[in-house]
Length: 272
Image (cartoon, rainbow, N blue to C red; front, side):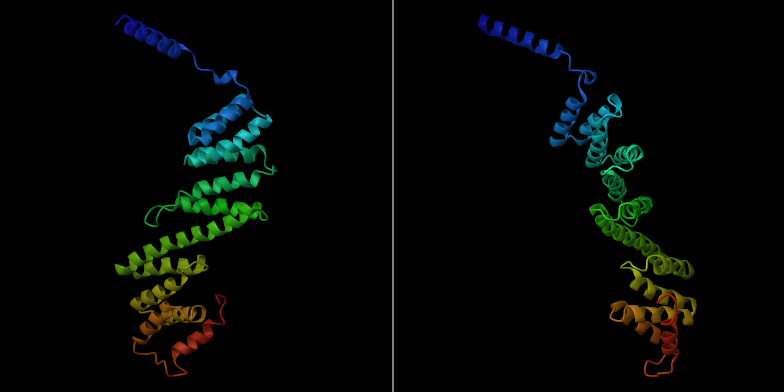
């Protein structure tokens, strides 16, 4: 029993001594030591802790080569931790300090990714989509011959398609509730501003629906003609053509009918 009590007492004293031992102050470490510890944290999956560690180097050893490397690693670590605001802040500081550096394209790319990864479904606010488009355009325009530019172009197209999808959702909402003029404005925005996206075909068809509901048959036929010329094999055009015939004035077998004349006029227009 005495042996057990003595062992328990010794264990308690050892534990208290360990707890009382002060942790090493980061101010006592070199820049390299802090950097290596932050790397270890990142490898261990502690991205946010790593980001803070790299940021300490910038604070304690400004203008050093370790600070330069750590600043970019801080941005990457915070991005991995999905702390997008901190990632953007660190990457922006890197661009401010080292705008001509070889790693500057990557810093700009991280900023763009931080916005892109926050894009939500089309039912929500699309401010992050707008910010992502602007940041992705910066990558393409400022660093056109880099691997980041190629990926940024792809993501730009996807983000643009997403933004067009938001316009389509609102337009369908208005059309379904009979707010046809408001619907026209949304669908025209897709055709005029997002005509390279996957939503253009449907937008033209919906324009035909909205114009016909408003009694603007000539405008409906013009939109149908644009759809016919640019997307002749589209299922949306088939629906549009069937819709056009229902007004009782167009005759598909008549070479001189107004639909055919409008088609010939529109294919000569600026849009095409």
